[in-house]
Length: 156
Image (tube, rainbow, N blue to C red; front, side):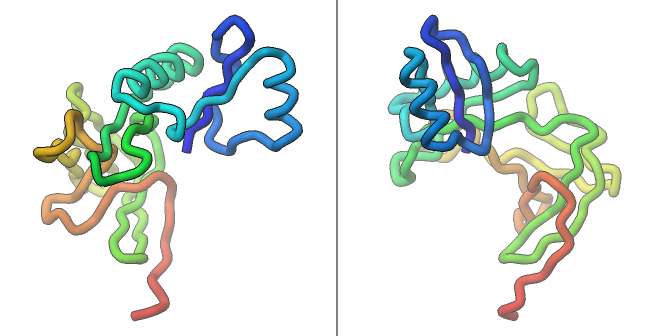
């Protein structure tokens, strides 16, 4: 979960996925700043604004996510996978390294890895406005995840 830290002027000072300690939160609040996360974005417009703020502050591309009306929190932001990122494919607790990203299509719909695998971004459902933050392989079984992971579900 990404946290966006704003100063008293409403400018982004940090974007982090590790949150902030209670002491740090109190310091930010005392200085007139605020911390926002997916728990604060009640509309898609709020998530789009947050993604734009995160993109402007970091130079990395963030995008808004609409998880649908039956998911809470519904709105979120995610960092767009970049060429060179290490990735793995995952299913039901099993994780297999999938190399590095070598190509991301201009529409962000397709990601290709150095192992030759191709992942397609899951399309919006009938009850969501935008695409999800999920890329799946051709069969729809494996999901693309960040980092190299090589482990198996011990329960099977």
